[in-house]
Length: 113
Image 1: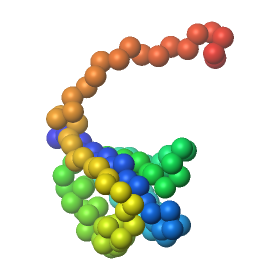
Image 2 (image 1 turned 45 degrees about the vertical axis):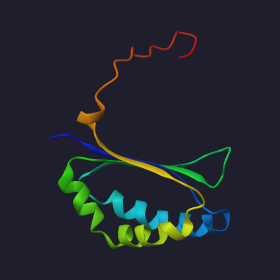
Image 3 (image 1 turned 90 degrees about the vertical axis):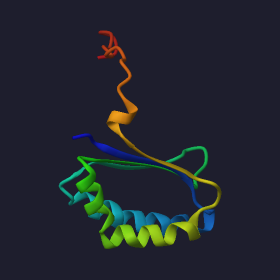
Image 4 (image 1 turned 90 degrees about the horizontal axis):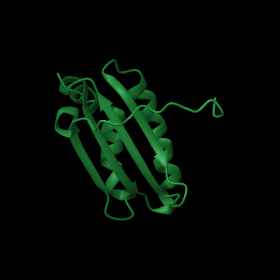
């Protein structure tokens, strides 16, 4: 079984950022209770305060399907088109499709520890 991840970079109309964030609070609280949610993160761009990065990772398709049935998700999806400021991008991938990039492990020098 492969994990499924969803990532999106979106820009929200500045006048809707507060409403967007309130809705995200409810969404994140709901996702935290789901057993198949492995990661659920939302970040705000420090240089463009109305740009957000969303990253979600699920154990499998069944976990993603269960997440999509939550009332908080339906509310978020219904409101999103009203909030968007510009073209946004999203991608739904499995970790198998993405593969693994071999990177050397980071070992801090004794001065950094």
